[in-house]
Length: 184
Image (cartoon, rainbow, N blue to C red; front, side, top):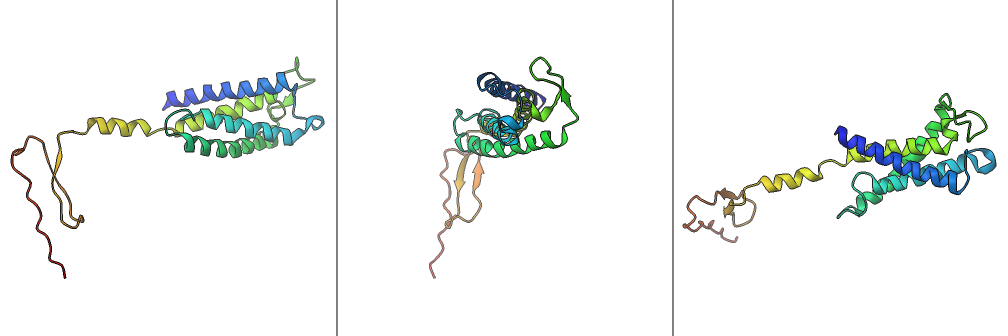
């Protein structure tokens, strides 16, 4: 479980870091301030980060049978990421990051895309990776089940319980059929 959490955090940091690098390097968006769209652009960037994190964290979209799950994670990842951005902008104003070589002065964590997006993606990646448990356990149980068991008899109407016998018990004798009920 700790390994999954660590993988999710690292994967989220990588996804958030790449999106923040694209935002800072490609669009030259150093801060989320009022001259560049402010809060609206911050929430759109956070939602995009949530979508991408939902598509790759946990059970990724390219694995077999994960299209619907990845789509749901992407949708709810966008909503949760926007909520996390709101929390960072609203209540994490006391956490100021000294990135003075890039920004004019120390800004709150919610104002810097280079810090806020990796934090949001890491939290989502850890959550989605922890949520992705249980898929491997079913395959292991199927492998451990004995293959030499067979059904011996079943009720006529299909409502009775089936009897199960091991493969080496009286394999030569035919199974006794259940008597049919008369129609009324």
